[in-house]
Length: 369
Image 1 (cartoon, rainbow, N blue to C red):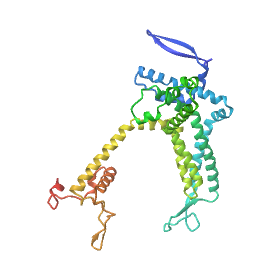
Image 2: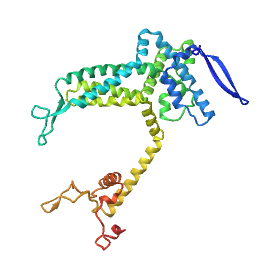
Image 3: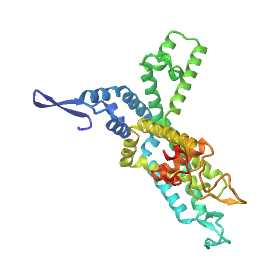
Image 4: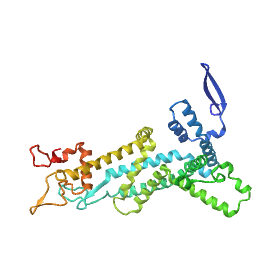
């Protein structure tokens, strides 16, 4: 009964009341991922913004539930829908197993042994015999799961996300920007309610075909703007390259798959969300830091180019080497800025990179200042 009947508690005139309602059968198709997304993304600044933000997601959630219902009607697609959780776990645990084998059995080889002395050059490395074949097999399995994740993400989440963006963009006034012009669609293509109008009015086949081509192009553009899609694509490409490249270090590309840990840990997701919540502010602060470093570099270039020293310069034939590998003479504004960036960030004090300046003279007035 609790799956078909819902209840909402309402405080009215200081009295707590319970309102019961029938849960529509379509709601059973709402995915757990969508539920978590609503809980974590709704604006909780106040009750008004919470209700407004939640209600604005109704259309996209309704379309997503209808899409999930269509997936269940297809036996083949429904199988992949039901096995999604264990496929994600196998993909993640297999990535851990592969990298564990790389950790334990990737060694440098010296004189046809995997024991290298301190005086032997470390040039060639490879997986120990017997384990390379296992890593290749596991990599092939990983590649199969990666490709499956790629197309299933587009089918299960990509299509609803694209349709939601198209409908949302169609309800906004046309903005005078290049992006708005690129993704703009006429109402008969953007709104599902009006998609049948073209056929009812006998639109020419050539015009209808052209409109359909534009619709598919806009859908592809929206898909390419999805960060999650590119994350899964990168993992697939890396896996394919690890199998195709013949270099002994190619399997190390599978390190990228360990980043999937963020998708399996809610705690890490919250940590990343807290860091990127004010991402634009952090980028602007970093930009200001680079500007100030550039200012310091220009001042150093003009006033004391000879005083920047990491270490004493090498001297050969009575001449200091140029480029100076050990020192940091400001022979260009670019080099001065790099010195300020390196020493300022690592030591927190630019003076650590400069020679001492005495008060007794010998330097210019600018140096003393």
